[in-house]
Length: 267
Image 1 (spheres, rainbow, N blue to C red):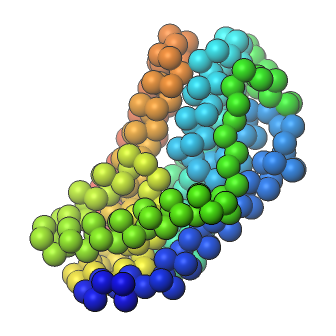
Image 2 (cartoon, rainbow, N blue to C red; image 1 turned 90 degrees about the vertical axis):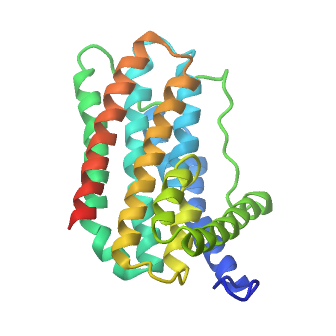
């Protein structure tokens, strides 16, 4: 162990980094070589498997200067990216902790389908007035970030965050109690929640039950989705055509996410 009282070993750090990087790398390869000429909608789906936060940030920046008839493409793609986030988390959770996965399978599957459903509703609602693009995105004014997740820099950042959340979770439980887990869930939502989730699954924290882990993960997704809403509206420049539909869609997904969290908390 690196620190005697914390169940953090070099092997745990290596294993978490390798598995998460491998999942992200598959998405990276699909985006670079299979769907490299795809449109905004496919970018949202594939990018969501890589990083939904980064994908929504990129899409919102592009939508800032996109033609008005293309905006439904970006809105739909953002909701699809959220759906893919739940799928990505389910895959990671299934690999590391089957007990937590079995408890989260239904709520996360529901949230994945619901988020994608909001995206599809947006698609068909605007189908008569605008054609969603499945062709190559011709917006050359904004360079899309496609960092290779197997690059040393990317892996190093993830490993650092994994260690950081290991320390934060341990001392939060020691000094605040199990309620500290919920506090960290909210904080983790401001960035990539994967290091927090992995650390929660892999750590050996006194008094933290499977039920607590399930509720903490759902709370982290809720926090993260609300933060994504602010990113989407902020980076899109607050365009009038985008603000209202983004608020409506994100708040709908967030409200259902909150309801699912409360139900899991109670039962």
